[in-house]
Length: 534
Image (spheres, rainbow, N blue to C red):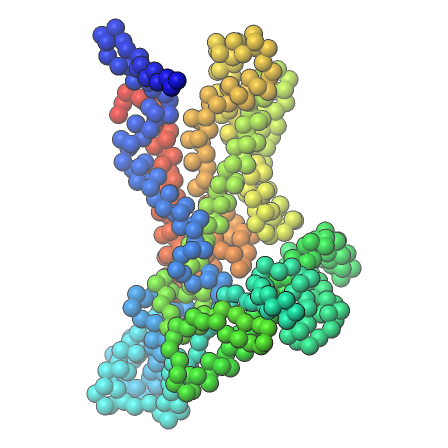
């Protein structure tokens, strides 16, 4: 027999009206929605977070791909890198023609050019010489020398014919079983005989070569982090680092190196084939196909014209796409803000909650510790920590969170002290609840509104601190990037290449403003004193 569940009746008041339930979070959300700037800030933060989280799926170029031919290309929406390369070369040739007297201008124009050079306004010089040269060339009053014509023709040929190959997947067919496997899913021990078959080398020789390469890589990393050690100290640190990697770490690194070598072999083989197809005029870019390198080795490759790229935000000093680096830089900056905030909040909650609830000597000792640490120069401590332990992302996280928990500890202590004599705490004590349960299951959740507000305001603070460290050269190191490191790299050439500074600065500024508006909105929404003001 099936019985129907009785519909739960809504609570009614004395006038037979339905009473709608409410909570602090629902009330805060209603009040937050009325704050338009806070909602806008929240939307912007969500968009930034989604871009950072799904950066690898976006149709953008690799953030660490270096193309030296594309150095310092300015932003463009409809022109290719090849067009900009040609324009840059023509600007240089027209400027040289003016200096040699082949590009004739008036005395006033020549004086203006010299003034620009004196004032270090090179962009105006190049723009003027290019515009004037193109004008005179169209009018037939100027022509390039034979050497300049050959230079232009060589550049145009490279623009038309050069390409980039990306190896997507590599497949190996076992001769005995006939089974085809993806090399990326094979282990180091399985890839070794594959590479031996490709290169006709002995496996033992390959293992020695891979070990030497790994030691060289680790040694370079150690020297980069600690440039002032002696040779004996370097060797001792190298041996310790190799031992700490263990068999799994060595196998993982060896697999990466072997895959890189095999990809290089495939790339070179594919380049020879494509160059011949370009000469024959039988190839159309972009190319996405499977190529056969040998009887057992094949790969999925993608080939595009090297100079057919469009850089919406321009390129940096190494020819890397600024749009890609800003998006991935946001990934690093936001991660630093979140991890630094979560770490400082976690430490601050524990210290503040224990000090506020236990009181007495525990409170006195912990708060005096907080007072002492408040008196220390925060950024100087971070700089010293980074200088001693090396410049990497993990050390940066630890350094930023090291003394940033002090304020949240005081805030949580005040909240706990105001709650520890409340009725629900007395009820928990009378039922025999432990101190840890009372503090972390009852009192801390009732302080979450203050903690959440503080956390949203700390994220931009951590991002700004990391930016300052990056400006000093102690922040995120290449090939990784953050908004701060991008701004720091762009400062020296800001007059010649302003886009390298403008775009990351705008991206960081918008996010910081959005986080501050969102944090202020949360503070107003959770503040009980202001719930009747909106």
